[in-house]
Length: 113
Length: 113
DNA sequence: GTCGATAGTACGGCCGCCGTTATATACCGT
DNA sequence: ACGGTATATAACGGCGGCCGTACTATCGAC
Image (cartoon, rainbow over all chains, first blue to last red; front, top):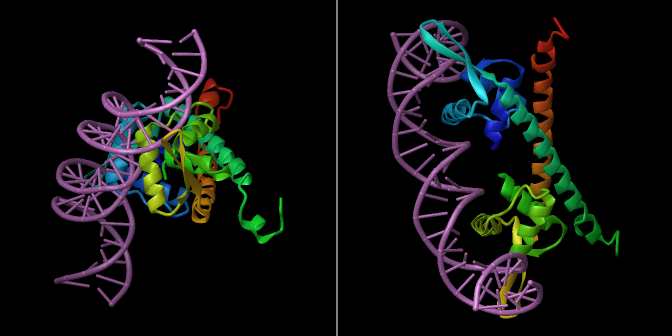
């Protein structure tokens, strides 16, 4: 699962949102780092709906325009939890590996082996 | 940065490795979850070398066969550290969002609001 | 002698993300 | 009155990165 997809699931975890709401939520959640493009969002939403990780919660007609709310399904929540663990494991593993690295501070002569 | 790429950098963080060594290291690091395909590995290695995140450490001829060792560069280590922080932030954000979710245990009637 | 592990190269395919455009309404500032 | 921004969704082409597979080649084990 890629980052945009992960963040979309994350955005939907707290409460159902419509498309544009997801864009704003992901923006906030990522501290402004990730700005979802419509192409990314609706494509991902379609795929996630196909996989059953999100479902259409309801459709509202606001001022003549359709507003479709998406909800994180129970399988979606399970998948998200699994992904969180995966990210944590990878982060920890990478940190341990970096700790084994000889370089930076050591090359200053602070440690000679 | 995608998962295979991240794990390749992680594998190279501790010490230089040749291609097949990376495949084995990623296998171990991920607890057997991620098995790198040659196409994935050598493609990623080429891209990472272009970006300067890894460099060719040395080339050895072992029993007539070339063995090319790759090393994580300092920019590569910096990029990996940044990515670790990114993963952690996302994992934490997702967990917080899931905590806001009404469902599962609550729907058992243990909490009625 | 053949199988599996080691080791690397090459190529086609495809999924998922990106950029962009189109469409439409509403509100704000100038 | 007009342009810019925000809200809201759909549809298109492009492409980066991963995957599967096949090919080559050596070595040890059975």
